[in-house]
Each structure stands twice: as C-alpha cells, then as structure tokens.
Image 1 (cartoon, one colour):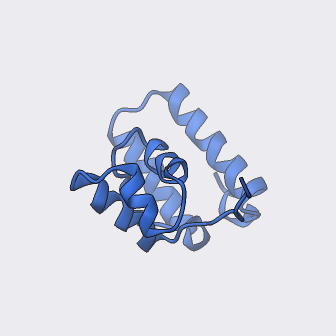
Image 2 (cartoon, helix red, strand yellow):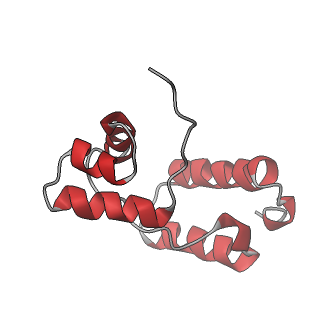
Length: 109
C-alpha cells in the first residue's frame, strides 16, 4: 500500500470531525470525507479521550506582563500552596524564557 503524505488538519476540519463523531458517525465514514484512512481520524479524536477539547482562547505570543501578574494573583486568590505557586512560576519562566523566547515577560517574576 502506498503511503500518503502527512496531512495537518485545520481547526475547521477538526471541528467537522468532532461534529460528525458526536452525531454518531464511524471513523471510516468521517475518514472518507477527507479521503483518508480511519486511523488518521482516530488519532485526532483519541488525543483527548474522545472528548472535544475546549477552544483555545489565548495565544502565548500575545501575553503581557500584566497577564502573567493576573495569573499569579488568580492562583494566590484560589488558595494554591506556596510550593505549587513556585512550580507554576518556574514553569512560566522556562516557557517564556526558553520555549517562546520572550524573557522580557518574566524579568520581574
């Protein structure tokens, strides 16, 4: 069997998959819509255990110092322990310093 090139589904295509899955269509029926094998559809739906993921509302590229400060205050207001708060801040520092390459956001954390 000839291997097809990898496809990266758009958010619209994924939404179609979820809608059809919730209506009770099989992986095979959904896959035919995209001219793919059922396993490629199963992979998308299985990533979240068959539960439709929440729509992303915030991009890290648009984060500001104020956003990070508000998040820290939110954690404190909801009773997070000092150890957990430290872990969250450390994770944020690593993410913005290394992964997102925005060290200016965490300079005063």
